[in-house]
Image 1 (cartoon, one colour):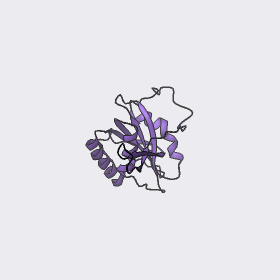
Image 2 (tube, helix red, strand yellow):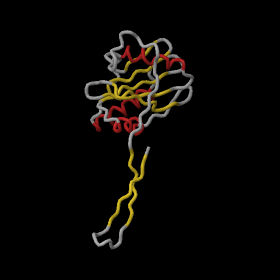
Image 3 (cartoon, one colour):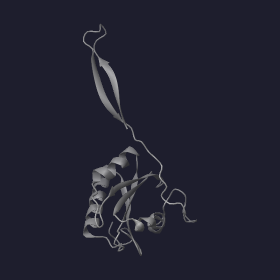
Image 4 (cartoon, one colour):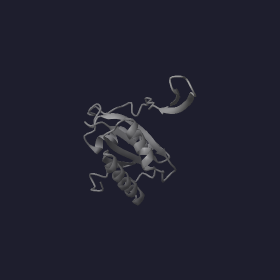
Length: 167
């Protein structure tokens, strides 16, 4: 992922040349199948409702541990990439804004959709879910990256922070 480059410092006479080595960081993206039986109405590379997010990621209900995902979107809300930000335990996962926005910066994302599952089956957001969403929203505002929604997926459905007035 990182590569070391060398260059020389010194004058033209070749007095004292020193080698300086710096790491160059380049984003490396891979492909992962999210869903094979894609709903027929899925608009290709855009989401227009939280229901579509739920339909695409509803398989998270089968995961035994909580997972936090982020979808990174361009200025026209087209999907650039997604990142499995964190995989936690049965009822919690640790999410830090640095991890969420690192991929956002590397992919030049203009907006984010946040998604996570509740293995308990109840999609109702916990106080911790509300707190981290608020913190991510504040960080996104500072960076100029809009958080469009946070969708919590449970056994019997989903909860959209936007639809419930939490974002």
